Image (cartoon, rainbow over all chains, first blue to last red; front, side):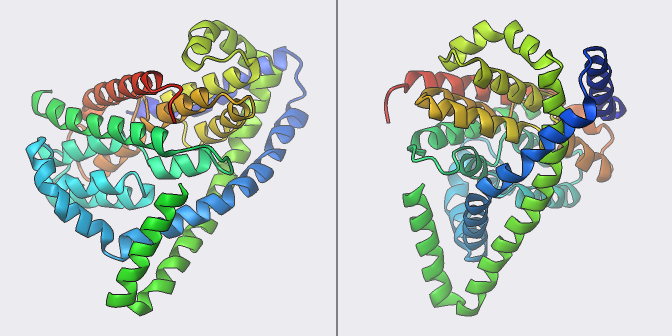
Length: 169
Length: 182
C-alpha cells in the first residue's frame, strides 16, 4: 500500500502546476483559503466541546459498558462476534476511542485473525456519527433525529455485511 | 440533539453521583481537553485543505469538476445551487480518496449553504453520505494492521469497500424515502 502515500503529494503538485498555468497567484490564493480556517473552527468549537464532554461521560460512567453488555446477545444473533460489539457501539461516539480499541483487538487476537478482520471492516465502514452530526449541523435548529438514525442504521448494516464478507472473502 | 444531550448527560451524571462522585469533574475536563487539542489539530488540517481548495476553486478546476458531475449531483441533492453542489462534490471526492481532515470543512460549508436555502433534504443527504464513510482506501486501518504484523494488511480493502458502498446506498435510499418527513 505504498502507492497510497503518493496520492496527497501528487494532488498538490498537479493542482499547483495547473493553477500556475491558469495564472493563479498561488501565495495570495492559498493564504485567502487559510484565512477561512479560524472562523470555521471558532464556529464549531462549542458543539465539539459539548459532544466530547458527553462522550467522555458516556464512557467513564460505565454507561457505554452496560449498554454493550445488554446488547451483545443480540449482536451475536446477527453474526457479529461479541468482541466487536464494543467497537460497534463506541465508534459513533468516539473516533480516538475506537481507534485505540481497534489496536487492542489487533494485538489481542492477531492482526490476521477473523475477529481482527471483522473489527477492521467494522471500523473502516462506519463513522463517528454523533461527532459528524454535531459538526455538520453546528448551530442549526434542524431536527437531527432522522438523519442520525438513518446514519446509524446504515452503519450497522455495513458492520453485519462486513462480518459476513470477511467469512467469504 | 437537545433530548439526546440531556438524557445521556443526566443518566451519566446520576451514575457518577451514586458510584463515583469524584470522577465526574475529571471526566468533563478530559472531554474539554480533548475538544481543545482536537480543535488545534483540526485547525491545522483546515489550514492545509482550505488553502488547497481555494487554489482548486480559483484555478477553475473545482467548477469543472462540479459541472462534470452536476447533473447526477443536483438530482441527488435536489438543489440547483452551483456553489453548494461544487462544495458537496469536492467533499465526496475528498471522502472517497480518504484525504484526512479534508472532507469536513467542505461538508460544513456545503451544509450551511443547503440549510440557508432551506434545503434540509440536501443537508441530510450530505450528512448521511459522510456518515457512511464511502472510502476507497481505509488508510488508518491498513496502517494499524501493518503495525501489528499482519501478513497482508490491505486484504480488508474489498470487504470494507463493499460494506461501505452498500451502507451508503441504503443511507441515500432511506433519506430519499423519508424526504419531507420530520
